[in-house]
Length: 166
Length: 216
Image 1 (tube, chains in turn green, yellow):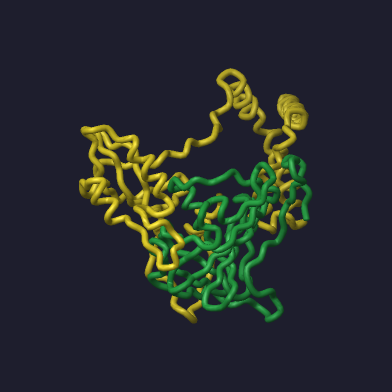
Image 2 (tube, rainbow over the protein chains, first blue to last red):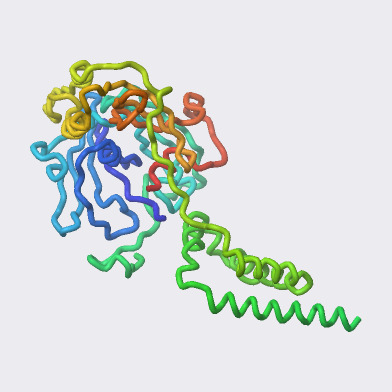
């Protein structure tokens, strides 16, 4: 139960935090996936993907994670033959991109609320609609901008039962 | 009056025994739920909350045990003879396609034609279901000669009260709906389309559906 590290999205020239995991859906829909090692409570899924929108299409362009055997995982680990770019045609749903200052911190999943949410509505990997939701205004101007997590427990490799909080 | 003293005295003994029993049988990981709750509600870590939770609450319960000890004894005896009420993990119901969800019967060729994937950057195989082509082939391998394939659209509510829309194809064998292959799986937001427009301020935050989905 820890706030989770987000995926990354390159959209309209900006590098954004993306609070949606399209790859989880790929695995749930029958796509072959390796067993990722998790060594941190802020990253239960075991990897961080970098995504890109090009001509209204959602692509996975990078992936960092460690497999259970200790090998580094990349896009090619999941999609052999497509090491640089994978079209996320399996994904239909809404991608959430939190923006602005933090309004309410929740130390679970992607539960924190920020001033705005940019939503990208995707149908089979293609953007159909975008909209912004205003959630409120943060008090004061000195708060941090953008998505972040408040803390995590990191496990030494192979010692998942003995955590140390950082 | 002496009976009242005896009654309250027994209550005090019961209280002491209950506290001792609780201390002796408390498992090491009993504090896990409170850690999780503290993560969800940071005020649980504050002094006033801990005073309320760790001192005033137990003191109040202890004060009530002394006059009402027969109730506690009754419950404990009941537990000893009939066991603790079941608190096992709740089985998550598994999604299945029902006959009501079925839409149209299609041939494999028709499905493969409509599910062909093409990407102008060549980032997906130009085959039915693209990167999920292997999973589709495995799904088809499970078919028998008289089976049919139907498209389906289903709404599903998980035990977390999460509402999904799932679409895809299901194998129908006689009257039975068998295995399914999901092609669309997305959250259905309650009140979708009625969100606040830019500039409006919303107050109060409930746990939205996307959080419940991402909490895995």
